[in-house]
Image (cartoon, rainbow over all chains, first blue to last red; front, side):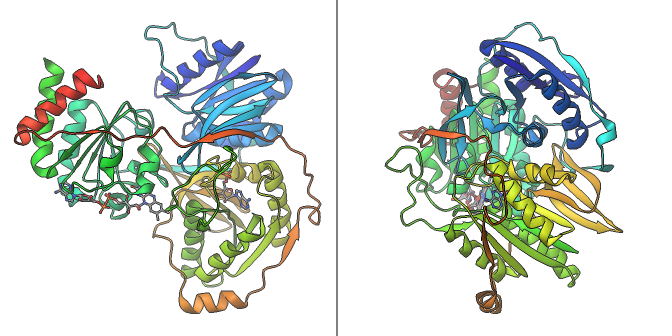
Amino acid sequence: MRILVVAERKETELRRVSLELAAIAKGLGESEIVEMAGERYSPLPFVAALAKKVEAEKPDLVLLGATLNGRDLGARLAARVGRAYAADVTELRADGSGLAVTKPMYAGKVRAKLRVPLPAVVSVRPGAIPLKEGAPAPQVAKLEADASAEELTFVKFAATASGGKRVSLAEARVIVSGGRGLKGPENWHLVEKLADALGAAVGASRAVTDAGWRPNEEQVGQTGKTVTPDLYIALGISGAIQHLAGMTSSKVIVAVNKDPDADIFKIADYGVVADVFEFVPAFTEAIKKARSS
Amino acid sequence: MKILIPLKQVPDSTVRVKVGADGKSIATEGITWSISPYDEYAIEMALERKDAEPSTVVAVVTVGPARSRDALRQALAMGCDEASLVTADETAPPLVVARALARIVSDAKPDLVLCGKQASDDDQGFVGPALADVLGWPHVSMLTKVVPTEGAVELWREVEGGHEVWKAPLPALGTVHKSEKEPRYPSLPGIMKAKKKEIPERDLAALGVDPSAPKLEVLSMEPPPSRGGGKIVKDGDAKQVAEQLALLLRDEAKVL
Ligand SMILES: Cc1cc2nc3c(=O)[nH]c(=O)nc-3n(C[C@H](O)[C@H](O)[C@H](O)COP(=O)(O)OP(=O)(O)OC[C@H]3O[C@@H](n4cnc5c(N)ncnc54)[C@H](O)[C@@H]3O)c2cc1C
Ligand SMILES: Nc1ncnc2c1ncn2[C@@H]1O[C@H](COP(=O)(O)O)[C@@H](O)[C@H]1O
């Protein structure tokens, strides 16, 4: 099988998912890895350049990361070249003349195994496969975006007040999320200090993002982000079905809630029935101690 | 300005989705169907434009089985002006859906098409960008805000750490991540008005849509791995419980 991998960079580093894609591609056949050169992601210039390459070289499979931009680019590229498209797959392997993939459906409430006919475009969820540490960096060629295809004008970037410096939710290995049980945005230092002690990203329930306590982009769940970290810590979150849809595939789930009957305990690996205001500071100290000894 | 929203009817977000007897589709018996959540946001976003500028016309369309008519009716009750149904099998491939929607767009001539970022059944996020491509229109994904300007729109796209703001010439397409307010509930007068509205219906053949397109085949479905049987850590005061939990995470779960 011939595979074209579209890699993505965050600032100066290749994204981890791009390394994962390179490893997956290597296991499937002969691969080429390209990175789009252009000032910033925009669908038309990126698709124009990629479609030209795909039509000329006819790789059996185009692989992208199921990131914000990767999913968007993959969808429009697949439409342009008339190929099958599977988004956000968590497993894939060759299956006769096609691919067998696993992907979430019904807002993550179902895992489906699908057969994808080749040629195809597939976006793969970050963290889908474990990476061997110290594997050599893949060879990445640059592909110039076709600026002549642009119809949009970039106006500006409006930064979220609290955004920027933290680990991104989608790729985080550890996430600490806060819910309405935190009572207000002024208490988020509790969530943040615990996250800092763990090197974690910060998430939230929709009750919290709707109330404007935290920015939208931190929302986890059916209408927020779907996350699959090694460790998910839910603080003062009740465990509504729409929240669970976004985090139930995490490896280990910890819940802290003062209500022993909260639904979140039904899916937690470790539960603590406690007041977050009392427990979280003690837990932050305990984490620091456990990590340093 | 005219805004068209292609919407999909999916199991309501409160439904505990179960795999059906065939092992490759969901059990639909007795479930509640609703407008897919991101499509509801798209409708709300359009209706907020209409609140600000009453001459705005908001239309909805869906490609799907007969039951989808209820979703259109609900959109009308929320305050949309027009609705139309394209009857098709649920399993129509996404590129066929996009082509059918493109036909509707050529008839309705909206300035702006707003799709959901992804439908809460296939979780794909394919049809929006695909429709833009069939139409040859520019698109911007992950919208949280639309601001009309002279002959164009400013589209706010949620990204890591903030928003990118793009200006698109009209006509253009966006996929919606969230509206500024929560989707509104249908009002009683809205429901009465919606009942009287006609919902024209056509099928794929009548639209002259080419039905051939690559298709994903479902081999099997399963619920996510079941969880439970977790431990409640409770011996001692907050400090002692915190220390036990930290050690369990480090030594038993090995996630620190
Ligand atoms: C279409 C749709 C889509 C949705 N999408 C999402 C989504 O993507 N993500 C999402 O999260 N929700 C989503 N929701 C909303 C969801 O149904 C819930 O309303 C929401 O998850 C509740 O958030 P919460 O758990 O923070 O708040 P609550 O349900 O109010 O729970 C607060 C919890 O905190 C506990 N608590 C209170 N005080 C303390 C304390 N001092 N110490 C410890 N515990 C305390 C309480 O016991 C309670 O369990 C969606 C809903 C709909 C209809
Ligand atoms: N059958 C359909 N009829 C109308 N609109 C659709 C249909 N399928 C998808 N869409 C639109 O495309 C978006 C993305 O859907 P999907 O590609 O299925 O995730 C949805 O949120 C809708 O706005």
